[in-house]
Image 1: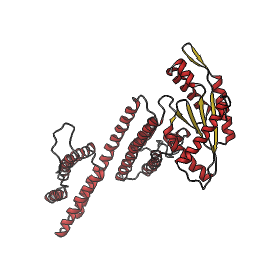
Image 2: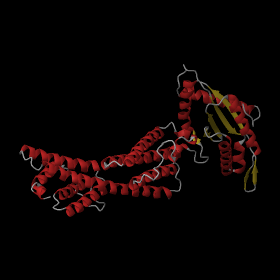
Image 3: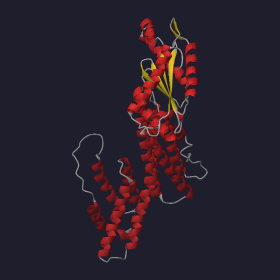
Image 4: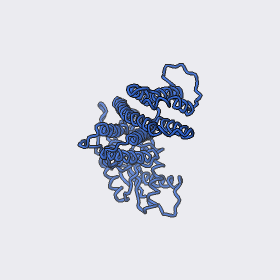
Length: 426
């Protein structure tokens, strides 16, 4: 240490020259330091560390600097580059003065600071990540309607398990699932029940982020298994994992909003405004593969009489009752839309007209056999259904008027079922 003391004035000058000059607003609020204020304070703590006169003082000032850095979201890369830049500047100045006798000692001095800072930063950073993860879980747990955030819970738990694996660093411990298709979150991503969201850009971003996350996780586990002594690499990997994790949370929040706006508030079925987007996607697939799909349009028979006789509240109960029949009878891969009033549209992927007619007849039979009981009122109702097979020629352009034409055609089939006596499929 005595050798280094003689270079303290040089170190102080290097830090002063390297210091970033930032303008900041005058702020007297109680919400803590602004980031530019924090950088200025960080510089003081950094200089205190480099001018420490003893090992005990180095330990104390290292703790103070690292704690402040993490507390104010100053990245490890900023701290590391600051240390390396000052070291290089000092060595460059000494080389210009041709003072080479203590170069090795100065290198050891800065390398010692780097090792201590990095080891402590990793330890405190992992603790901070754990607290952030547990806080996110607690926020989700008290939400009355989690929707897709329930799957984000599984993702956060995966990250917490990875952090524990790194902290314990014992080979006997089992790491979290590294295959992105096999973890609980990955299983949800590939679940057919989310098919109506899979065409959105947010869902595709989540898939990409999730694969990257598992790739990083695999590298973290390999690092621990190989017992490599490069904590700076581990810090970088875990910071990227935290970034991807937050991005996944943001995208899931967007999916929640899409889910909320795309569902009919009464029946919780998809709304008509989502129909065109999904229809375009299915037409593209049909055009590329040459495979047909089917449309099924349903209309409750004499529904106006239900509203006029018993009131709209009872009518709403009937609509919800029929929606439940649709969800119970149809497949998870089918798209069910409330098209307006008492009309419902169903898109049946990779389904022939014959298969669609069988499904339609099953719906007719189930509906006619059911009763709706509201207080002392016992209601029976029926449904008329039109079915259309959709197969688009490869030369036909896919536009809005293409969709409108198919909707008109299936509507004509429904009208034919009504004309022929209702409670039937055409």
